[in-house]
Image 1 (tube, rainbow, N blue to C red):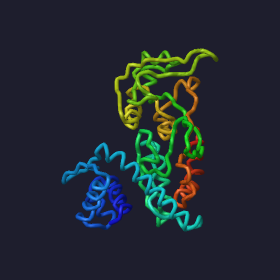
Image 2 (image 1 turned 90 degrees about the horizontal axis):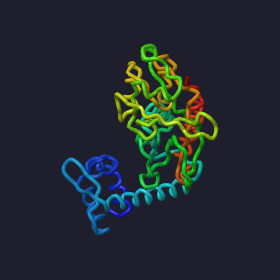
Image 3 (image 1 turned 180 degrees about the vertical axis):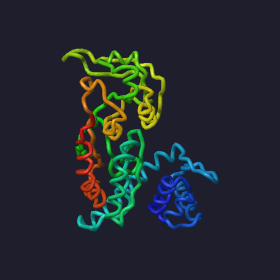
Image 4 (image 1 turned 45 degrees about the horizontal axis):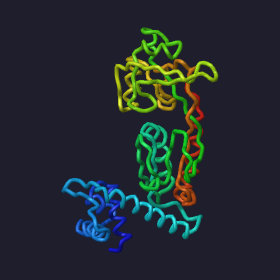
Length: 304
């Protein structure tokens, strides 16, 4: 087994979470997979994986080598697909990433519809509430909801989202509607364990040139899952501060009602982001062309 093929085995083991999984994915025997990993470790002169019968875990050296392997394999695949011609049918493994809620509610249905149209494509969908290194983790396209730093990544603008405050009508009827951000300090709040919506809620200045208004809320519930925080708010347990797309269905159905709409911060931009050169690959271009207009339409919908 040559080194490139051994790299494929190594990366497949990481993606599948086990050597056995890599063997099933690649159609190779367990001894062949083990030999490939051993060969790579012998070549680099360091252990790449800590292995047990049930799991594998990257060593520090393995983390660095895995990132390099992904870059090599992505570059090779891109070169092969480009050599086959720009009109080649989309095929191969497409890796996408998105925040958990956006990926579950918005991106996953598009992926299913895309796969129905493209029988030669497989999708690996990584739903993670962290910034993924596209090159190091072999990602073709990412849905990003944030102001983007300057980089070599290619960004396709989708739209923007608002950060809002909302609660169930039953809660507002019992405890009253806050009229300004400072009122939140006296309300029951549901905080997300997240930089945008922790215990310190920041709002724009009251007047141009003023200082941002910061309110330290006293949450009765702090949830690491935005879905859990929203569910608690729907049940009438307090005010929550999600992004508007995360509660679009709940607001339209009347289960949640927006408050302090004139105090919302500047909307956050939404993009599809790809490493330089990846959009020329047929499978990536096909998904971008398929998903972009549909995502633009969803993010253009007014919530509240």
